[in-house]
Every structure is written in structure tokens, then in C-alpha cells.
Image (tube, rainbow, N blue to C red; front, side, top):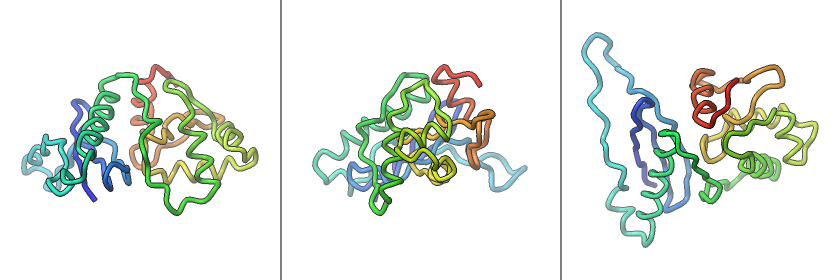
Length: 177
């Protein structure tokens, strides 16, 4: 397992966790938190986006990881980026979860769907709450873009990062809510 940190101006530091070229977890960038308020800021994060030496030994892994890091950071710079070909770790997912993830990955950059629409796209027209639960536990936030799912009466939610973060992600894609 390799953790690859990445930094994005104006957003903060995020992490990609990979097992070879397969994405296992993705943390969206957040500003560094100061664990000691009033005592200065945290040291700057490592600017390295190249995996550890152990990962370099796997043939073909480093170029794929570097490419993914460049795509992720490009997304946060406002580039129209697709992650449809990124291999994710879906081991242990139910058929429902696989169907919801596939439906969500088909929602295009700059588009939004409601939780009901997502459930319908996945083939489960009465499972909007379950689709929402899937989004709440999503560990691949850009690759399986739950920020593109909105509530029937408004923007919906976005977990611990909050609605302002979700609005910023949608604004990057030209969506105003």
C-alpha cells in the first residue's frame, strides 16, 4: 500500500492510497490543521507526488500513479478531467453498490442528478435512500463523484467537508446551485 500526498493551491493537501495502480482510498485536499492553536502553523506538507521506493519496483506503477496525481491536481485547477478509467478497489461491494458506482461514474462533468435519479440510473428506482447511504460512505470522491448528486429540494449534503466544499467542487465544473 502506498500513500501519495498531493497539494493544490487554494485547496490544501489530499492523499491517494494505492495498491499498485489500483486506487484504494482518496482524501480530498483540505487546509492543514494546526494541532496547537496559537503556536504557529503546521510544517508544510511534502511536495513529493512520487510513490515510495517500494512502489517503484512494481513495473508500470509509477507512471500510472504520477498520471493520476496530475489528473487530480488538474481537476482542482479547473481542468475538465475524467476519471472513468481509474481502477478502484471495489472488492466486497454488493451488486447494488457496484451498480450505483457505475451509474454515478457515468454522470458527466458539469452535470448533476438527484438521489432518486441516481437510484433509477442504477436500476433501483425506489432506492434513493440507499443510494444516498452509498454516497455518504464513498471513499473515492472524485472518481465516484458523489458531489454531483443533489437533493430534490436543494444541494443535499457532503459529509464532514460540508456544503461549501461541495459548492466549490460543483463551481469548478460550472454548476451553480
